[in-house]
View 1 (cartoon, rainbow, N blue to C red):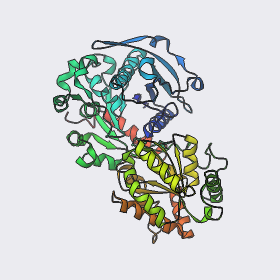
View 2: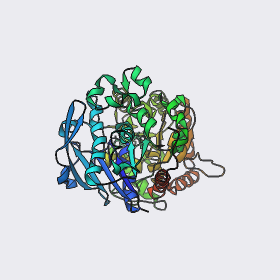
View 3: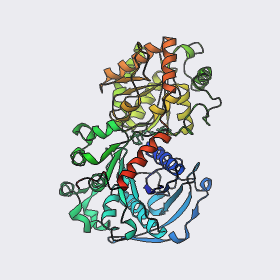
Length: 494
Ligand code: ADP
Ligand code: GLC
């Protein structure tokens, strides 16, 4: 039976992206639509969305809609288009005062209002379209208040009588707390008795915590992370609420959109390759290194290239690299290509390292789809020493490109990379346990040692490239979860 799903996310590939949430939202919706489900996707119309390329058109009956939030009156219109590469409909919430800013996210005092508007707008649009979703699928803190709104302000509407809410946590560290003094301006004042008392006592409202407390079900993006976030070490203060909902939490590993991320047809590469045409990968490596001034002609073949593509945030393990990378560069022969932007201290670290080792370290500061694909294709190794990693996508992309991931055993990294055993020759990468410089040094050192043994390395690459994390499989888990929810199972003792 086709399901009706209202899917709300703050970013969606290829319209607007800062990280993996966008990739997941785009690919999951595409896969659900391909299976015949009626999924409607709601997101903000940011300035960064390329309106011309998408050929947006206005939804006539969703023009100048009014939303009253306490003493605020907000207005928005809705523009629509098909998700590129799919027939699924996207509805973009057009509210220039809130969404036309320099970046998708910011620290402005009305940050909470921007996403509260998105959440309300999704529900209001369902009403005006006469669309009765069976599942209201919210993602991360931005739409964390969705389940509470559905249970309260929208419950009167028969349209939502059978709607069940699902909150997907892509990253528990971002919770979107805002000052409780602005409650009257949010329209949530009348719901105060339902908000978490502990947060209110501290003068705050925490949208992600409210999502966890009020959603019919909670999912997160890997089975290991689903367990981890129920512990104080990984729960960022929300582990208690999660333990209380323990029977209503499911971990589903993200999938990969292989239409985008596969060296057999990567549109950013001048030449394509697969497991039986690895000489092309070597050519791409040479071309990439030459262009980036890395190594000399002789060393490009012999010495491994270590790639990284990442937001420069503490989550990704960069504090370890500040200690470990300079030592590793002294201990081993390898080159390093890094693409990323984010926190200034990490940008400084990589800039200085590249200055110190111009022929060994290339740092490209910024965001570039094209460079990300090139690094995946050209590198031999891919490093993700994350402090925590809800799922992580680049390690899965790397596997398909025959670029061996070196990862810390946490979250989705633990669920998608299997430590290689040189004796049985099974496994797909290097997995280290300890979050310390010694762990990274061991991981990189082990990979470099294996790299020197050509036959062993070829086997490892072959194992990696044979992995399949396609959304065609992963979407089935979401559908099964939706069905369980719709049938009323999976309900907890809220
Ligand atoms: P997160 O969402 O925590 O940043 P993920 O591994 O889930 O981590 O997803 C990151 C996504 O963002 C990947 O598709 C990755 O290629 C992309 N990405 C991250 N930084 C950059 C960058 N500087 N340029 C291009 N793509 C990037
Ligand atoms: C978050 C996580 C990342 C995950 C992505 C998509 O940004 O940090 O691990 O892959 O969401 O779910």
